[in-house]
Image 1 (tube, one colour):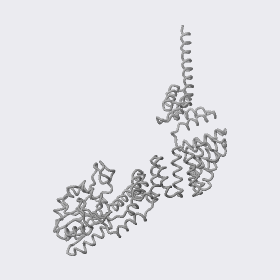
Image 2: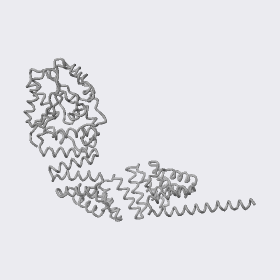
Image 3: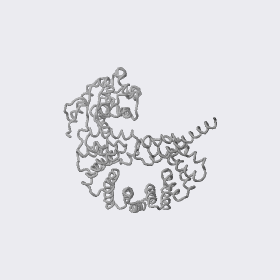
Image 4: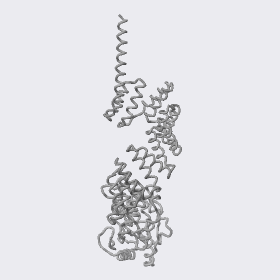
Length: 529
């Protein structure tokens, strides 16, 4: 971009020096009350105040620094030391009273204001402008603000803004600009962004946008700032915004492999796996030895069910970094989905050798061992998973099934109880628990377990839960309700053969029940004669 500066409300070209001279003339001539708005960065504001003091020694200059949001500026000025002798008062930090109120764009106007809510400070400025003039007839107020704050004031405090005698845009000197950029780029990393709260991330985005608006900003600096902006959006899970930032990076530098890689990760988090793979491919065309790109590409392929291609991608990652335990683990998942169970176990074992605390790998390793009929080894693997993360109810449940297969019913019951202590709203756990209790001769308890399964509200599209609830109702002898539950399972999934079989069983129960009732009525009438 050129070094052209612009007035905030005009498109008249001027140099930064011209802009400063215009401000200086206005301040020199001003006698008494006035308002001026200057767009500049915080560091640029420090430079500007020093320069004005040097160039206007005859003027009494004060600086009101606002360190936190306020809703009454008049009170702050009234309490400012020696304010009755001031000619010029620079007001710095008013934007802090606006940052909290920035919302998503309304009508395409961007993030500068929200029509539903006005910051109290802007209401105050609008309604109290005559008071400013009457109370401070001797002071010319100079508001040093970032671009977003000036836009906010224009839209939401137009009466106050219209009294301004000047609106100026003072670019930051190159050395100061580079120092501010370096602070943003070098002093914070992605892990810190993850730890920030949404307000902290929002403020940093504002700071970046202000630096991007500087007219003297170089393309390299723009690229670095936009990349950082994308990372902040990514950390806040604002993936669409992150993608937009990375796209702007790539418009400046198409061979930025990190931007292609991060863009792919953002797309994958949005479930746009095909686009994510294309983005990873771009990154790998530039930097073929990026093991993380190969790994994430494999994950995207796996999410699409393209397991063979996923394994190939994981293998490329492992050639570059053999100790990448995540790749061994995800490779095991892909092999398991393909039914290549022996190979899956080898892959899980590699992952666990590198990271013994990966509880998911122990869990899936147990599932594969169970599928191979190795129940004891499967249970041992589940126990390893639970030793690391004991609050995963699915592991307790599937461990109970393996114990039940081995005939260890009491231990299976304990495992189901552990599962239900963590999550009590899964009807299938109550159902299998009821089976165990029934087999152990604890009929009353089994009926309570079936009742619990029957009482659980089912998600409308969960055909398996409707089926399990139907079984529980059948066990309780509530055949009509059971039939309704099986019908709902089949309405959700017409090809669900298990529900079809269970429906036919309960129909026979209903027919038999009706036959017995009819027979009883017939016998009663016969003996009544």
